[in-house]
Image (cartoon, rainbow, N blue to C red; front, top):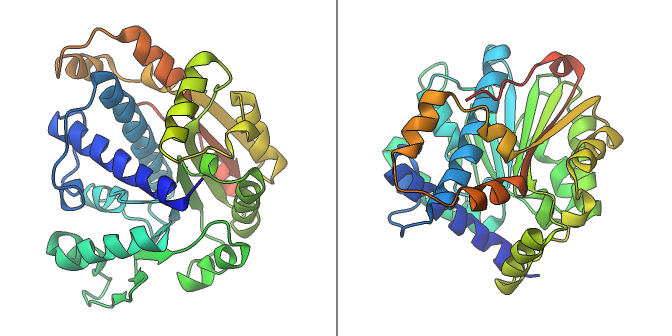
Length: 314
């Protein structure tokens, strides 16, 4: 597997999300700065991304609101994600929002942020109204937002994130990984989870990735990724939802829960489901069910965050 193959998944995901925005599955006023155009995607793909995006956003909203914004978020493998800007637009800005990714992706993101006032004006705000943003070739640091180049397989680099971003380990912290752990060797992902549970005693780890891959549908997905020079070395570490939960409790978290994305879909309010149904013609319901069955959302908590009931109702 090449790192380039993994980095290419950022472009794939960003283009799928941009199509969803154009078709009005969800709103994102900032993704257009990172993805200027896209091509049509199959309706089942768009619906899958809708459930993914809305579930993660709602988990973020729930966490920030329950801590009255006195919290931190670390988005690992963030790519061209626009969560920070979307949450800020909703008035839900945590004390610190950190994004980590490969240097090549971070440099591209920095160029876009630096060139668009709609993006850089948001990260430049501080309590005194002053612009204290520091931008280098491989990082952005402001009072509320940090973007940092890092190889997540490098234990030493990961351990320096707290210091580099001036994080407070005592604050409630949400660590997010979307399709990240599955691209890492099991040993590396275990170190990452263990680092998070040890460093942030009051924390929630939120993970989205493929699961239930042992059947024919899963094999086809794996072969498709392999054909694009993108292996999934971590996929066998957690073949089932139960394994997803056990991974986190084995690595320091007090509680863990995992659901497949069909379960997340069933939490959609009836009115919103009807709205989605009107967006474009769709009759591949069986394919969508199979697709969502092979992705999951898992979360683990400890400390004060262990008392949080993560509300994923969309």
